[in-house]
Length: 342
Image 1: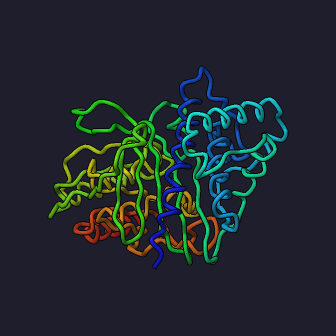
Image 2 (image 1 turned 120 degrees about the horizontal axis):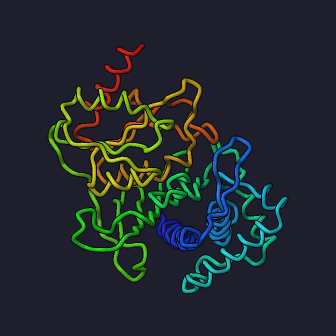
Image 3 (image 1 turned 30 degrees about the vertical axis):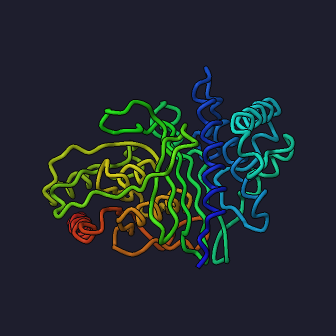
């Protein structure tokens, strides 16, 4: 089996560059927020991050398709927005110039739009593809809270490489070491690792989930947005498991990264709509990161996530991620609460 060393390296460098771009937007006086047709917020950071990441993938693996979240339609309609995103992409490339030999850089504003649109692949059963969320947790980003840049490689519909950049996640959750910004990386069968985002020369350190014998000793990590997951059901599940620690709420796949390094133990995302389908880019990178850190990710019925069906996980409902030793008991508690509600 391939070691995927090049794919991992390219993904790490691409996500690092995209994080630099998103940080520049966050530090500016205005986010450049616009609104999609579905009324969800999107910022210039989303467009810029997607373009620079796909540019890096295309530079190294031109035959690989990418399932991304954004396209260039709004930028083609708004020249001033296009110019701003292009300026951000150039600045991010300049700030990470040391990686240009490995991941290239966007040649022009029109090349940027071309790369953005390469993210419109519909997914499905293909030999290789990448899943990208350029700014996962856009609302968290707009609040200057937790968000993530998430990239995963899928081979024959299985996630084999996952990289997550979390610019606002504390380097040390205990506060003993100051600073924020972490880069997480995992390859199937090779473990999960992390390093500070701004320490490009630092070694990646292996991370593991907490080894807890009983779910009652666990803590939850859940979505900030009640519209993303049922907080009420999760509170009842916690009570059923005997969990007394308060839940930690944050946006994005930073939750996967957080439990993978032991900040928390369980991540639940229970559907609030019978028709909602999870997007593959919201879970692909986190799936392999948690698995390689000693956890299990399934849907709320205990089934593995099926990434072979296009842009959504339409055969799955809900998400349960937990340390391997307690995951079955968490799924059982989820099933009990859902059965009561049914």
